[in-house]
Length: 119
Image (cartoon, rainbow, N blue to C red; front, side, top):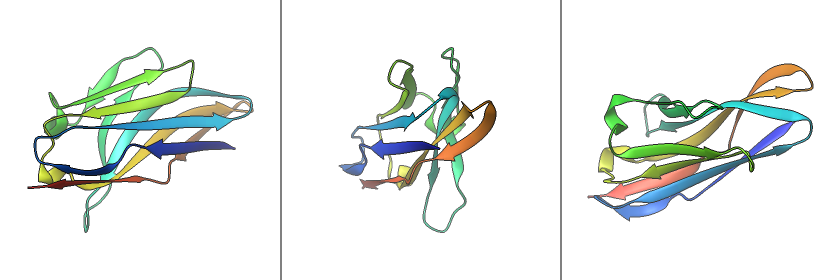
């Protein structure tokens, strides 16, 4: 089993910044791609950004140029730097990780961290 623990959410005014962190822990696992998803009230969960194990990134158009995903492979941690935040960025942000554990490939999710952007 792998646990993903997120931190860094909070309340911020429009135009402000937040940095989310997500650390993976467990035994006998290797992390492949990691990503951040978000879910606004009444809407489906959507992808924000992903990063592969070698650092290749991908962003949804709505966050390009404002959000930056990065990772520290030595700590099995992924980050999401969010700048120029907008009220429409409000939602529950989830960390996702594609993991090889005990020779099996699995997907894990964090518990979510709330981001609220006030206008």
